[in-house]
Image (cartoon, helix red, strand yellow):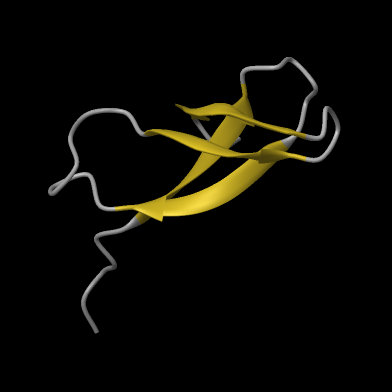
Length: 55
């Protein structure tokens, strides 16, 4: 079997709540870092989530 080309990334909230989502990303198709607006239940608002490395 071939090795998967997707990698897991942690999408960390910019509201500094510590909340994060885990997403899959293909680095060949998306070489730049991901940034998306999603819901943060801690502050109960939609905020921008930025990509961080998984540990």
